[in-house]
Image 1: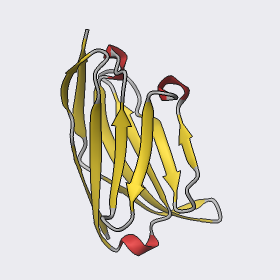
Image 2: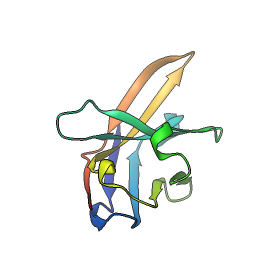
Image 3: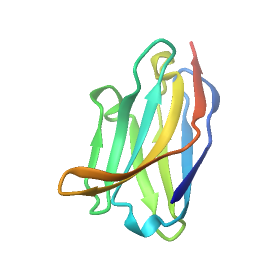
Length: 120
């Protein structure tokens, strides 16, 4: 089992920055894919950014150039640096960790989510 705890959300004005953190504990040795997802009110959850154990990174188009995903393996922590925030970035952001083998998800874990609100 893996436990994920997010922190760093809050209220920020448009154009501002926030850094989200996701601390992982438990049997993290099996995890080979991490990501940040978000869900705005009335909308489906979407993948914001992903990073694999090999360092492959991906972003949804709407955050490219503004958000940066990174991880500190020694601290078992995943980060999302969010710059130039826009009101449309307002959502609950959740950390995700997966164990993927041959393209199939064997284990899938979620954090509790942290609210990010961007005012105009």
